[in-house]
Image 1 (spheres, rainbow, N blue to C red):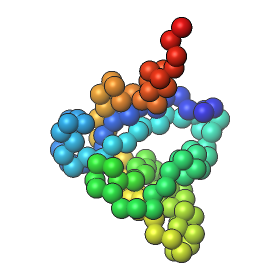
Image 2 (image 1 turned 30 degrees about the horizontal axis):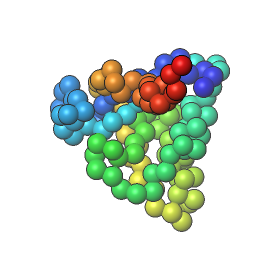
Image 3 (image 1 turned 180 degrees about the horizontal axis):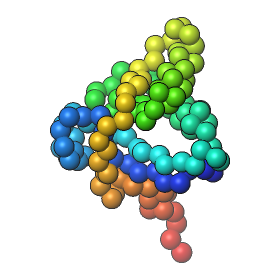
Length: 125
């Protein structure tokens, strides 16, 4: 996606330090996106997230839907996007909007997961 500098899979949102997939404790699986706001806006990132996500069912902490913001502007944009997803209260949306906290990079096998899955299934000639 143009303007995305880096995307790292990991864990955040919990109080325990150093969560892992096998020992996730109270954290949530998440991805951290570094982006160039001169190329893509935070709102455009939220649009892309919403187009690929269906947060209409409650989930346990590990898989909950959440947006972790870094500024009041991001918080406002995230809350607006969640409201849009709920069509003004006509549909239940399960997305927590919280301030960003410590982020712990996930295991290597989680990084670029979809690309790895596609490569593993591609015919080898």
